[in-house]
Length: 381
Image (tube, rainbow, N blue to C red; front, side):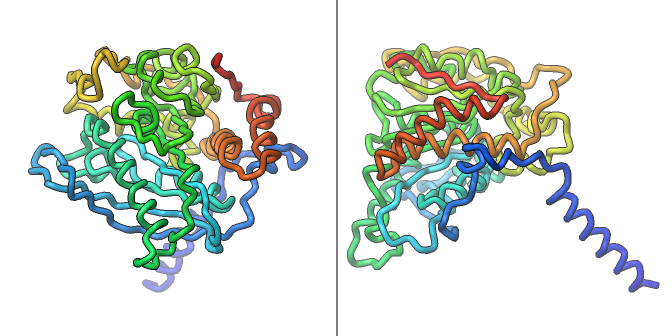
C-alpha cells in the first residue's frame, strides 16, 4: 500500500512539473517573420559558472542586524559560448530589488548563444537573501560593483600569467550594461553618472528602471546609445514619471513601450506566474514589504547633487492600482524583451556593418510593425 501511495505521489509530482513547464504557453511567433528569426537561439552552445568575487577596497554598510563588512562580496554568474575563440562583447546584467543574479537568465542565455559573454552579480544588500533584509538605498553603491566586475574581466583578458579562460577573449571596446527595475537604475547610473560613470561602458539598457530622480543634466556628460523598455501598466515603476522622461531628457535615446506588460513578467521567474492575470499581483506583495524600512526616506542626495542632475523628489507610490489590469503572458513578454535588447546591442556591437544596419532597421521598423504590443520611439539627437 505504501509503495502505491509513493508511486502515485511521484506521478503527481511529475505531472505537476510537466504542467508547470509546458502548460499555458503563448502562441509561437509566426515562423515567416523577422521577429521569429531574431528570437532563435544562436549557433553557440552555452555554459555558465558561478564565482565569488571580493572587492576588498569598498565596505558593505550595516543593515539591520547585519554589522556590515570591510568588503563587498559579489556572488557572480557568467554565461559564455562554449567554443569561445575570439574576443566577445561583454554585457553586465543587474538584477532588481529582492531578486538575484539569475533574474535575467533568459537574456543571458540568448546573448551567449550569439557569441556574447554575460555576467550578473548578487548585489550585497539588494538581493533577495541580503543579510539584514534587502536594503533598496544600497543601489548607490552598485555602479561601482559594475566597475569592479569590468576590472575583473579586463584583468582576465590581459593577464598572461593566470591562463584564465577569458584571456584574450573579452572585447574591451564593446562593453554594455542592462538591468531590470533597480538594476535598470544601476545600469543608468553606471553609464551616465556625471562624476562616477564608467567610461568603458558604450551602450546601456534600462528595463522598467526608475529614473525619476534624474533630470536632463544627469545625462549630458555622456553621449552613448541608451534604451528604456517599459510598460504603461507597470504596477511598480510608474511609466509617466520614469520612462516617459527619457525622450525629452536623453539625446538619441530609444523608448520601447510594451503595452500590457507587468513589471514582474520581465524577470526570469515571472514565467512561472503565467497563470495569474497579472504577475504583479505577487510581485507587489513582495516588494512593498521589502521597502517598508526605507519607505519614508529621501536618499537621492546620496546619488549626487542637483548640479549633477539628481533631483530630490519623492517616488510615486508603488502598487496602488486596484484592481490590476490583465497583463500579457510573461513568457511572451520575455520574448519581446529579447527582441528589443538583442537587436539593440547588435546594432552597436556587431562586427559587420551590414549586421549592425539590419539590427537597427529591425528594431526601429520591423519590430513594432510585427509585434502589436510594442512601439519604438527615438529621441531627437
